[in-house]
Image (cartoon, rainbow, N blue to C red; front, top):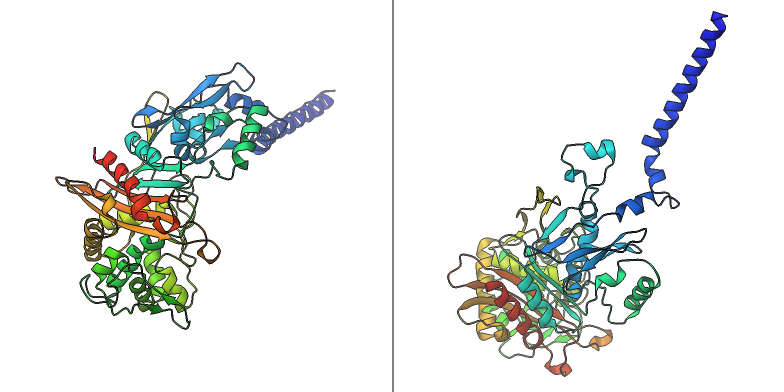
Amino acid sequence: MIRYIRRAAALCLLLLLALLLNVSRIQVLEADDYDHDPANRRLTIARYDQPRGNIFVSGKPVTGSEDTGEALRYERTYRNGPLYAPVTGYASQTYGTSLIENAEDDVLSGTDSRLAQVPLWNELTREQHPGGRVYTTIRAAVQKAAFNGLGGKRGAVAAIQPATGKILALASTPSYDPGVLSGTGSSVTNAWADLNGRSSMPMLNRALRQTYPPGSTFKVVTAAATLDSGVVNGIRSRTGAPDPYTLPNTRTRLTNEAGGCQDATLLHAFEVSCNTVFAHLGVDVGLRGMAEAAEKFGFNDSGLRVPARVARSNFDTSMDKAQVALSSIGQYDTRATPLEMAMVAAAVANGGDLKKPYLVHKVTTSDGRTVAVNRPRSHRQAMSPGTAMQLKELMVSAVAHGTGTNAAIDGVEVGGKTGTAQHGTDNSGIPYAWFISWAQAEDAREPAIAVAVVVEDAEANRADISGGGSAAPIAREVMQAALR
């Protein structure tokens, strides 16, 4: 009898072990699959059962949460939504998240393990904490100046602090209110369809995600390549460029709107933006040299995060000489985001040291305990310090005596470069107006800001549209806001 009891006990023990193993398999190995099963709403309900952490600009929250009393209890709200939409993105119960709302979602939703008081506590309990806080590098006054300067036109502004890489402004217009996408129901789906159906594409982040031909603003990169490679020995040296310039192995003649471009110095060619000079210099530098120079400024980098993803700016690495000539004046297939062109200006302003741009200064718990801080770090050495000094002189001269006079600020050293980028079939589209610049106060040790502005639909006759006329005044307002 005892033998049968022992056998029964052993069988029960085996069954218990099998049960424990199965429970462990479900709770440990297959837990993630069950959590994300479409039929399981537990995590979704828990996610929205508490207020979402806030995003801060200049120390003040630009987001909030509203208690709806529904199953998905708290919905995201936005203060000055259209102003900060290119920074925050949206947090929608229907369509997910974007930009900072996406990149810092674990912190804002309270699931990030760094928010726990005890290390590894989340891994053991899978507990959700109160949403953390995300403090951005955006300066409210600079952001407002950029947004108001664009005035609703299609375009964008990106502004960086050259010495640190902090992004001070990201404006994109026309914009939208992310709050209309926060909840669920027909109002949200209708708003989504309406926003995505508009030809003006208000949800497109033009500062980070749209690339444009940079036009003559790219001549800053070509000038850096020219000086670093020794093709021209100093900005007052003659360039040997003809006017007009016949593109290599073609019958296409490149001309200029300005005079004095025949064998001009680099200084004069930059001041009046001689296409022939920079196209000729790009060919002299060569495809490999031009591509290497562009990549030092950040072109062809598909991995840049700020922490939101930034679209890849392009400089082709396989071209004939005629295409190199056109690419060297920011045309052909050369394309750049406004953030990339702000990085170009920032690299010049910071002595050739290009800092990695970043948008999040620090992350804290809901009660203010800091869990992560971003600090400045070098991204690339875009050019030699000597070349950067010469480029600063070129950009200052372009504002003082050349095409960028509309960006001048009394008592402030301002360097800039205009650009008018052709596009469309046979260049039939309204040109994009560009301006990139930096500004340094008289008593300051370093420039305060580097800016890039692009305007897609400048309201002017086609012949009158230029970076100097349409984009430079916006850049000036942004720079003045930063200096104040």
